[in-house]
Length: 313
Length: 241
Image 1 (cartoon, rainbow over the protein chains, first blue to last red):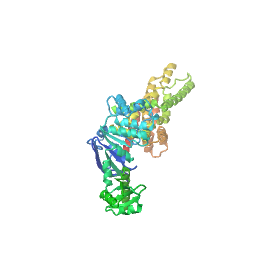
Image 2: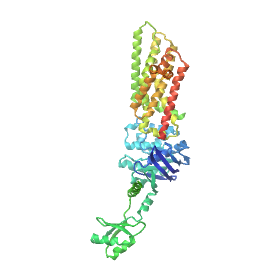
Image 3: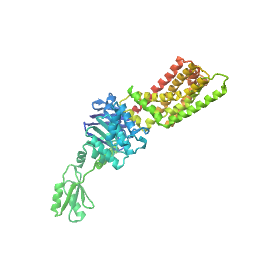
């Protein structure tokens, strides 16, 4: 549904995107993850036909964003980061206006329909200047949905919302994901983990990782950390030395209630740790991987990148 | 065409949704009312009153109030981020510009047509020359279109409405007085050219005395066209930044 190939965007001497490529299948919720200034908004603006790329190509629903810009725009619903609202219009008047410009039949009743979907129907006559931030976000979403586009591009739709509103918007996006292809940018990692089928992590204009959230975790988890808890209170030093001697263990740290064991990459040390503990006559209460959150993965990836960049300098 | 009509409708409606349009209309009518009354009192029966007179004043006031009507048009969209929405809808950039221009021009048309009150009074006092009044209105209408195009151009240039309004006023004042500006230029060809841009001479020496001249009509339409084109270019250039 969305195809991006070697996309590059330069603003003067600043390069915002350095040849990124990715795809989103029909009916997929693609999370677009990165720190501020990574190039998320730039990518979305190119995909919505707002600005052309410097090089590379991007296509939505088979239409090139540059040569068939109008066809692309017909098929995309876009919620920019700053929700584009007219404060002097009513909620319904605004959505109807966008519907008319998009050539939707029965614009007024269609506007009512989408306001019902986003739960803003009861406020249809309110002036936009008088509604809360969360409501504005939902009105913005209604605007993006009004022509029932196959592709939705949402730029940080949960930014600045309170926790309850954030949950509401996430639920809404998830339910829309059943019938739409959604590209969803965020810098909140747990959000991408909860909402998206697949995650693209972008940093300084380059894609640093791209996979399902669970797969991303697995990928980096190999040789990751294990938590080991023992029953009898042995002296921490003795245990640490014993675990250190297990083949494949890189390092051991004593924690409050156990030990964290860092395994070497690609080595499964669980069985050997269990054996070593049993051989020493200690009781093994717990042995489990310390799950890495997307947060850790993200930090790891971006820090690695930063270090490499510094070396190059 | 459909897109232009939709944008036009919203823009025109927007004037009546916001207080500024009513304030501007109130102030303009008050001013023209004063000058009209003053003129009536001065001539008091001794000479026929010139029906174009309130309109010449109105043209002069346009220099100051038209930028207040146009400052919003693109600067606000730019700042609120709604231009990004419009530019990702399936419509052409020029349609946005033309729709907005027509909305502002329609409001201006309503505003100047309110002065028909004065014409009715004149008709009642002593039968005036309706032809002169008619020509003066056509001229004022074209004059307004060109002024709106100037104001809108500056609204597209920057996000700040106050700056847009001020630059618009400065530009219109210079254009209004362009014959005086031409007088201080020593290069003769350039001076002639600058003088020919004068909004005042293109209005006061033809339309306002009851003559609809083709060259002056083309002048105002030309200024409007060139500035709308330039405005559309500025809007489009956002895509390349």
